[in-house]
Image 1 (cartoon, rainbow, N blue to C red):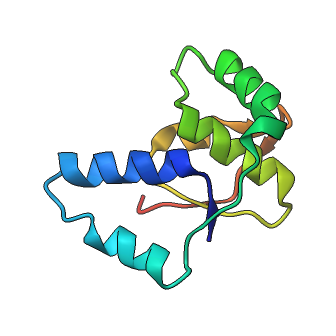
Image 2 (cartoon, rainbow, N blue to C red):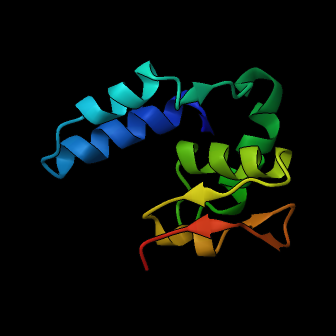
Length: 102
């Protein structure tokens, strides 16, 4: 699973906030399930543009990175608990492919 480092940080925060052990997330990294290969220095302009566009939500840095990563990978599918992803659009018009519990 590809992701950026901001997503790991956000996931660890949310796990701790909700009283869960974060060890399982580290285990996924250990077995190579998580890959941090997002090129923020090369993509910061688009991430910034997304955060500005959705500032009324407000869009988090991790969310903006996920949307940008989906724009870069045609078959991307985002696993999320965040309902705002139903509102976000790739390239201003295309909906995101999502896996959600609702």
